[in-house]
Image (cartoon, rainbow, N blue to C red; front, side):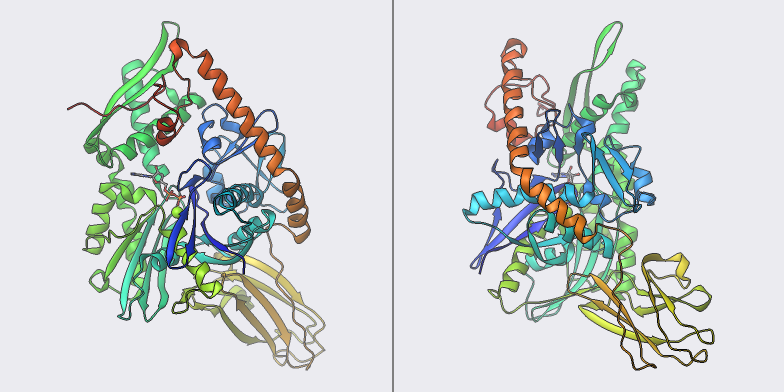
Length: 574
Ligand code: ADP
Ligand code: MG
């Protein structure tokens, strides 16, 4: 049987893992980093860059560099999250003909699953090079809060990338699987996952190899980016005070600020103060202006305290939904890069009145769990059974607009459940099945996820036909709804038609298109970037290397001892 890898397809960073027998292995990318930025860039010459290479040129090419595409997976253009992001994101979001949000970049439009597929293809390529064999199958993780269309979109990206996603599992569930508490004793754990763009908290009950999610809650718009933004706002205000120049009007300056802010934040997880130096951040008639300031850990904590504190609400909701108190929790597991910040750790400690578990790397936990699940599916690990739950209630609209729940929130999946309904008019020949997810009593207050008609009901008095509506949720959390007219004895089952997403033929054509030219476009992009870097190195004054400010620190080390004029940080001399 061919290998199945585990992939944490993150909003900000992705990570891959595989079980080699008993041993868990994180698969490094082609630059030997254990995580890969989920970033795709289009170069002017028609080349493509994915991962570190894409992130590195972001400052110079912001309009054509797509990051955080996961935010837009399975979403409508009219979605609140989209309208909120549209102003702050440097690339262009556009509505597709079915109302989905797409990205317009380098002269054409791309659906989020296609862009996500490019990240997957890069990961697949790097994994194949590392493992020295073809990789065709993967277990991919998604936030617990992903709804049906977001899960479908994730599956589509796998298809487009030529990767069979054999199972989708929730990120917190994967982290729990990786943390190794699969003991015989019942353990209740909290997974607190604060990444770059999303926050998820889940409460799980483990014991006898069973991982049961009791509840999940979170915020799809809370993460490390908000911490970075707080630092940017602070730097912009300070610069305005000192120089009277508003840096928010300059896109390149903002991108460099973002980069500087993030690096400062990361370094302040281990240092007490850092110096932020952004030379030539603005040009005035008196000449260039430089930003040079010291940011202390105390100041950082002061300006980001509210953000860290805002994770408490979803944690309380998750506890309440599980019917538990903080004292009922045995372990708290931290996941996501942002949990490396000491302030976040102290907030978590206060919420759950417990020192967080230290035995797992927050960057790799999710991919490791996906790898473990892959091993379970292959049959290599036999003593674990993974029970996941639905994050929402599901049901249909009935008379008077009332929402009739068929599957309750937090039901274990896979699951099948049916309810019987009837007509409200004499000789009614069809019923419209409108499917919604949510917790509100009126259907209109919940999220519509699909509609279909059941036709050909034989004439009958109102209230006599029996129409059975069946909900079927598979292990990936993907929903199918069918309806059957029982009273006529005739069977008629109809599958739900998704209201968004790509059609099968769209997926097929995009698969072909990307399959044909991904490798050549990627090598073109990489070759051009290498030439560019070489030229800039040659041209830089005094032999200094004109490296974009977004180059991650480890790269700099790799690139030798040369000092960049854009080097942002120095360790503060005490
Ligand atoms: P995602 O799940 O969204 O892909 P990650 O788990 O990779 O995200 O987390 C990325 C976030 O973690 C970024 O905002 C990054 O700045 C932040 N981060 C990474 N390392 C640290 C650190 N040492 N201290 C504070 N924040 C960090
Ligand atoms: Mg993550």
